[in-house]
Image (cartoon, one colour):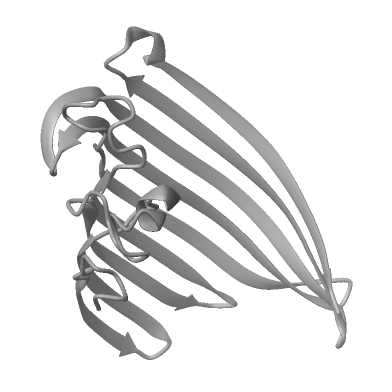
Length: 236
C-alpha cells in the first residue's frame, strides 16, 4: 500500500476481533474485544514552484519523515434479557486510544534552522454504558411500546502539540489534560395508529461536565451544562 508517491506510504494495518456469545432461550449475552493498529508515512502538500523547478517530482515530498500512528483497543459486554411483556438491556464498554501525527505544511517558513514540522498527540481512555427497559402496553386499544433508559460516558484525555524535526521532539508547544463526563436519561413511547402509520414521542435530558488542566493558565477551567430535548416522529 505505497500509492504513487516517491516516498512510499508504507501503510501497515493490523486488526483483531475476539467475541464470546451465548444464548439461553430469548436471553443473550456477549463480550467483544477489538484491536486496531495503523502506521504510515505521509506526503503532504508541496510547493508548486518545487515541482516546476524540477526539485521534486509531482508525487515527491519535501519532508519524508511526515506520517503517523494510531492504536485503539476496546472491550464491550452486552446483555439482553426477555421479561414478561418486554425486555431489559445492559451495555458496558472500555476504550483506550492513542494517536500521533507528524505534519509539516510550511517547511522552513517559521524556523529556517530546525524547520516547521510538528506533532499532534491524542491519548484517551474512555468508559461508558447504557441501561434500557422496554415493555409493551396499549393506549385505547392501540399497541404501544414504552422505553426508559440511562446512558453515561467518561473520557480522560491528554492532547499535545510538539515541535519536531525528523519525527524527534524538540519542544512542547502545549500539553493539556481533559476530563469529560456525560450522562443522559430518556423515555419514549411508540404507538402504531395504523398498519402504515406509527409515531414516536420522547423526552431526553443530557448533562455534561468538563474539567481542563492546560499548560496555559488561561485555558484551564471547569464547566457543566445540561439540555432537555423533546422528540416527535411520524413514520409512514
